[in-house]
Image (cartoon, rainbow, N blue to C red; front, side, top):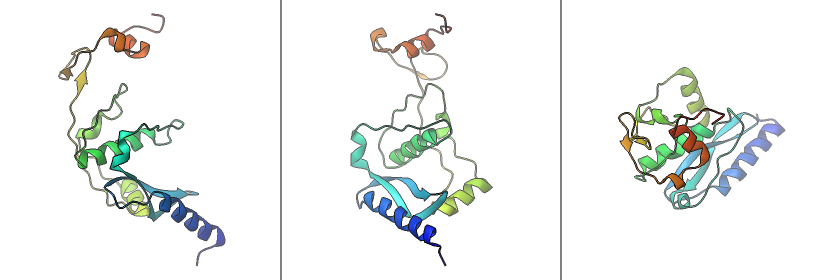
Amino acid sequence: MSTPSTAGSIEAAQRIARGYDTTAASVTLGSVVIDGVADPTALVRIPLAMFNRHGLVAGATGTGKTKTLQVIAEQLSTAGVPVLIPDVKGDLTGLFAPGEPGERISQRAAETGDDWAAAGFPVEFLSLAGAGDAVPIRAAIDSFGPILLSKVLALNDTQ
């Protein structure tokens, strides 16, 4: 039997999910989680047609921004939509290799109702500097921001 707060959480999760309900081809970001409890029937879905608009993924360190971008990129790739991700820190380079199953992943997938399976995705590395095995690309110097330019030129903090 559910407690009043549990029933309220389930109702709130379903209300949130109704706002994201769609029958169109979509990316599923995951289940609604309230007070640390996931409702596997309450899914947040974004129609593919919405991905031609601006978006923002923001949050404090460790809140899942990188994982959210990875989930979006994986599902867009699966749907046949090419994805370009500027990844200065290299956090998403592992997309090409299938993930490693583990107890924590299996438990979370069961909680959220996700039918997770390890999969790799097509990745092509690009390089502004032409270094390594990456595909070199050209860019005009005025198209660089100051931080990217400093990385390409390997400047220190003072420079």
